[in-house]
Amino acid sequence: MGKHQIDAIDRRILDALQGNGRMTIQDLAEKVGLTTSPCLRRVRALEDQGVIRGYVAIIDQVAVSLPISVFASVKLERQREEELDRFAAAVARWPEVLECYLMTGHRDYLLRIVVADLAAYELFLKQKLTRLEGVSSIESGSMQTTPRQTTPRQTFPIRERLPSRRPPPSAQTAIPLRLPGVVSTTASRWLKAEPPNVVQGPTQRNRQPIAANTSRRS
Image 1: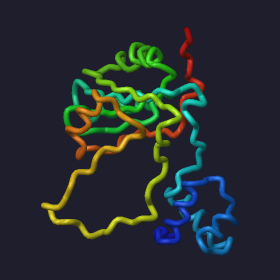
Image 2: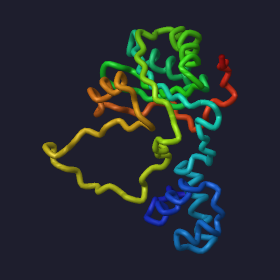
Image 3: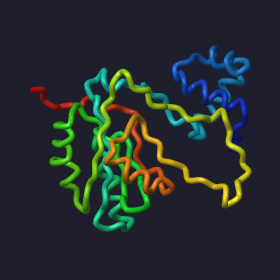
Image 4: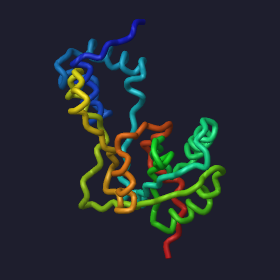
């Protein structure tokens, strides 16, 4: 089977499924202006080629008693490929780490860690992150999720396709690092210094570590 070329209809399908992954094929076909059979063929093609990687449930952090997101920037002792790979493989095993990004600049990795409270994060630092071989330094900033905050965006803006024409060098601007929620003042200082150099790392979870919530309440 040849590679499926994504067109405007596929983009409408993807946009609809991002909003509701449990939508029936009949409802999806009606929403994008197709009949059921060709709509199903398109969905299967997008799945087979890995454009649609899976379907997940987005869990509310507060509802599962994990209201705190901590953004930790990690500097390694050495930046050789084997050290970077070893660190990425280690954090991929920790359910508290929802997202992991490889950075360029003064820091090597940015982690998003979800915990019940700051005491649980301190325990995570002592028992896991600081014990990892090759870690030189860690800087952290926390964000507390409250019902009044805006819900983080969970979808890609794929319906609006950016123009392929590239602006002249004088008109190019840096792309800022966008994170869900609000980053603390400490974290935002170094993030603002290096926004153009963000490279997506090997780990990104959509699951909250519900089973791993072992913090005690006083």
